[in-house]
Image (cartoon, rainbow, N blue to C red; front, side, top):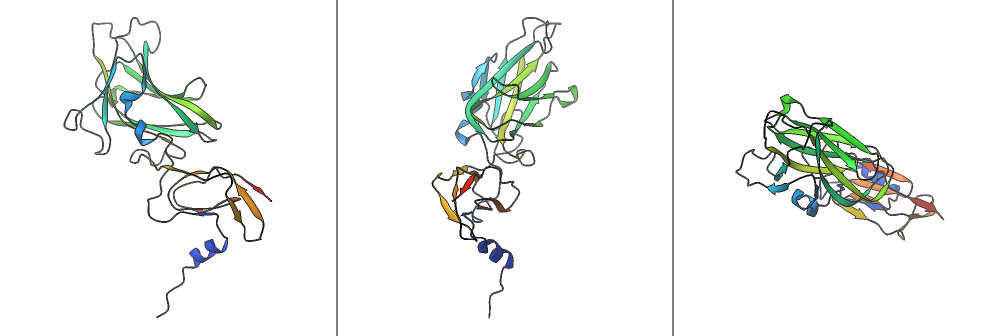
Length: 251
């Protein structure tokens, strides 16, 4: 019995793609943060007293099984001069951020009404995006996802800034729980449930021959191991993703 022909696959292969990724892995966004750097306790702290991983059976429970929860303790603000009165910052670098920027995501849990904002910034730049924390958000996990539009940046540092106010009625404990930090290109639809995929880098010396017989040199391409079929002049096929970093020069 003859095997049925997959016309779509035949059409793609007829274009002589320079890179083909199989179905071995699920399609996902490309993570800017390597898995080894998801431990928030290793991030540089400024205005933060401590960051501690809490146990799997501790309170609050994890927002999802794969997410580790961290308790961040911040010092009491010295005054009520500004709004917010104090800011604690967690920083990690260095990252290569693709042209167009990235989406950052974070689960947050707090019971102190004086926490006011969570802000993602690229250190030393004006690229920032902030979320206001509301009274109605207290006592439950909320997911914050923000998109920061930037040009291509190399060796950048990403900050998580926690803005909070002073309890003028007395001493207070300023603790907030964080989990599931994510950052990636076009990640806003998926980063609540996925850490993203790892990058694959092609040598700038990689060459490919197009269907017309011309030769092109492919620049460095960072893409997840997923269903992406790439040719020198662009992305031929995709699943969930947009091809964004293919450079070439025809010879």
